[in-house]
Image (cartoon, rainbow, N blue to C red; front, side, top):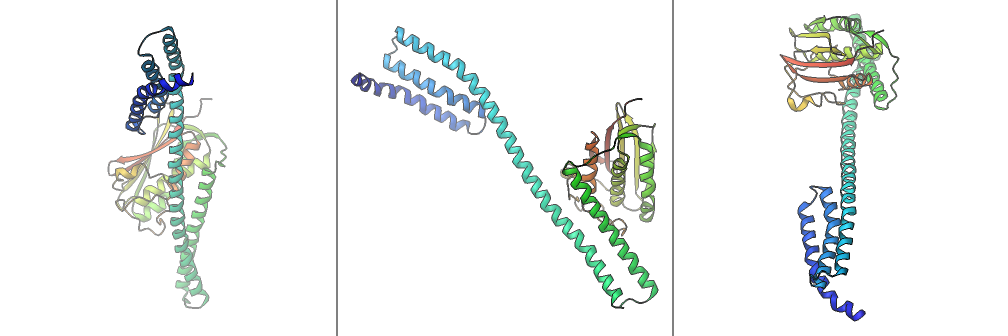
Length: 341
């Protein structure tokens, strides 16, 4: 028996080895193009090599033994090939998911580093100013009443800026941590928009920017009034910041099917196409193509306002997008309408 096996072994190897080598070449050519195809080849090559070896040993003489062997190989292929395809698809989906997860982690880490850098800068600047002005007041360098009043006003402005930055960070941390809890009720959007526009009107007037609201109908959404007001306020404030003097910021409310629509148009000159998908990212401040602010009451933001707006809109099961429109940009919010009572 051993002698017989040793006699046929060279023939079996001679016929099966080329098939195995061909399978290796196919796998190399496939590379990482298709994991499903690679898994299928991995299953078929051993079967084909085994079949080639059996045919070579038997001299292609279809004896009952060879017929049974071929039938077994066929049945095995019928079972293993679909299994290999399903397994390959599952592995491919998992690989894609893991790759996307790694990409998201890298993007999140880069965003966190960028945010820390921006926030560190934004904290240092007002703190340095407050410290310098406080030391000047304490050392008696500034004694004239009008100068003291001016320093006190500037310290108050920087303090409010720091307070707003801390509030934004707290709000963003609640959103990203999933700790945001909304108290839902029927909210008339015109009231929310009118309040936000009224609050921002003095800022717009000081900068020489026109600010108007256009309300069509009376859409009511199911949401949280303070958070929706924060969304509109952030969008309007952002629009005023990037609109040059003599420009106009227009806020429009309407309905589109089963959704309420809020549109905020500015006159920023447009956003580069490659930046449009990033305007809602944390710490993204755009490029120099957008009009810079010169209003001390509207300092350059920390890149949190639009990120917070997106988080709050998505918490309301809504959508927010930005695109270039006319002389500037249009930020569009869609929210589900409240069910009719």
